[in-house]
Picture 1 (cartoon, one colour):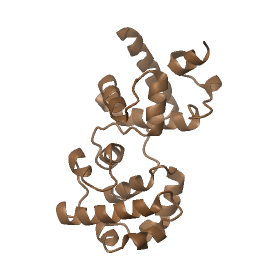
Picture 2: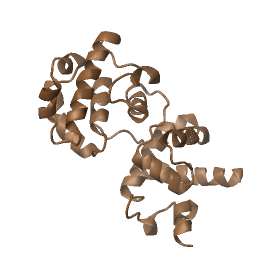
Picture 3: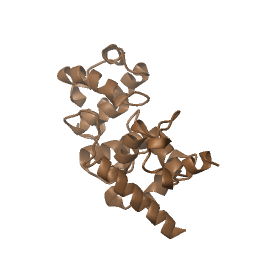
Length: 214
């Protein structure tokens, strides 16, 4: 069984690594703080839409000082084209103030401190660690969760359990790349409602595809 898992993982790494060389986040940012803001904004929103908003937003506000001076209502008016914008504006303003008061104006560089910021869960904290500080982490968003379960790299209804299963299976030096590979594969091929199984290079190793054909 272990050899089969190893063969599957090696194949998936080879295929996705060839298809998506040098992957990185598609959220535009020029600092750890901008990545934090963009990632908070990205919840249940596409990266494309976030980038449209931050292109203008970051021209005027791009530091904890800038955002801490705003009221949540003022920021909400700037980001109202994004889903859940009222809650996200509160999270960003509150997080900016905490970064100034508790972390000397710098985005925390460790997981536990990042989780102290409003609006920052495991996925957001992991994205910031990987994207801003090159710290090994394995963010699990909806694409990673879905694709890893379908492929049989993970087997759980819990996001946290999926994260732990993937981290135990995949070499640490590949965590960031595999995170991006699974996202890109989920967006382009292994879609939630209408997966393109007929063109998927991974279908020979996919539990979902095999069950669908039974």
